[in-house]
Image: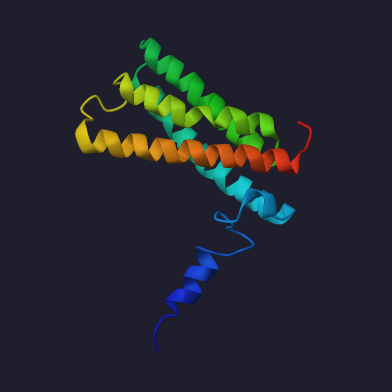
Length: 147
């Protein structure tokens, strides 16, 4: 008796209705839109919460940590708002998160020792994240046309 790996992957990783990440945004159903917005918002909220706590742990007298904490908390609020309402405005604000991550890395706020291949991989991930965030904005606009 073996595991049905293809069936498990289809059930938990790739499901046309709940995880439609490779379906063009113009072809998504309202249920698929809600599912994708929720997944993105949940993951971004977790990341923003972690960044907020990390900035708080960095130090209270540090102005950079204070700015990072306020920004990360604002992204957390925007992600929760996106997950609850599906509106385009919080989706647009969430696009700034990967840009802020690259800026923080370039200014050596996050990992001052990052260089070479690690830096290239980080920037490549951020570019993909920006592209996916733009998709999320398109999806939110489709859910709420005219906003």
